[in-house]
Image (cartoon, rainbow, N blue to C red; front, side, top):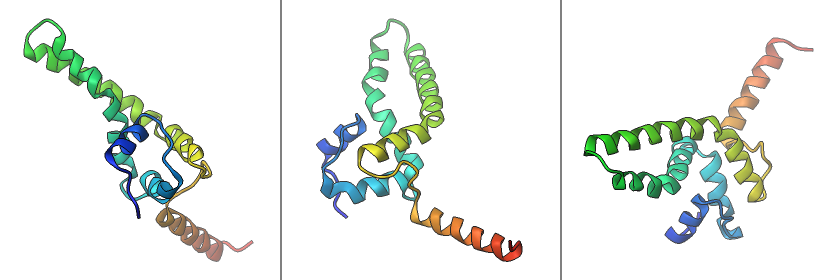
Length: 122
């Protein structure tokens, strides 16, 4: 599977659409086994300059680090809260259905459905 170069990945973190040859990478990025941690990192990267600006605030280092920590906690709250909507938006932007799920999760759901139907036939 082809991976984006650093410039493409950085543009992707800011919301850019990747070229078609990276479509499979995007699918794996959004539905793969490590999709949640990758999403958190991807959403935090654009905020790094904002966190760096905290060092320009007057005050002692502990106060500047406290401001960064508070901003980080607030950012993490919103990143996790809006993760399903952001994921669906990125999937649609790259030409996938918004409810696309990972192959492992789809197989698990099919197995659960088959077990349910075997136990409770209609």
